[in-house]
Length: 72
Image 1 (tube, rainbow, N blue to C red):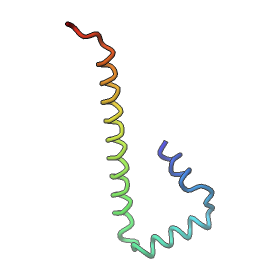
Image 2: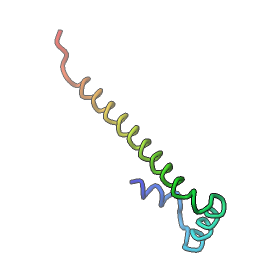
Image 3: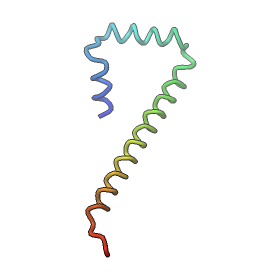
Image 4: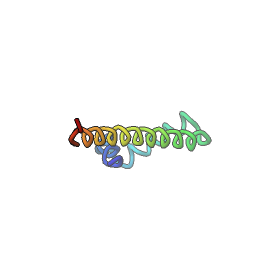
């Protein structure tokens, strides 16, 4: 799902456009900072997905609790 979102965001970028983007990133941040940036981006994406899954599970549990008959 994440790959689909990335591909949707990138649209119809070809090889030349991707090369220009990579060169711009290399010039802006330098070769030594790129792994750290990628690592931080990966952590951020993972935390976002974990939070999304946690909210989803809480909603599912809430729905299940509402469906159970309550003892009076």
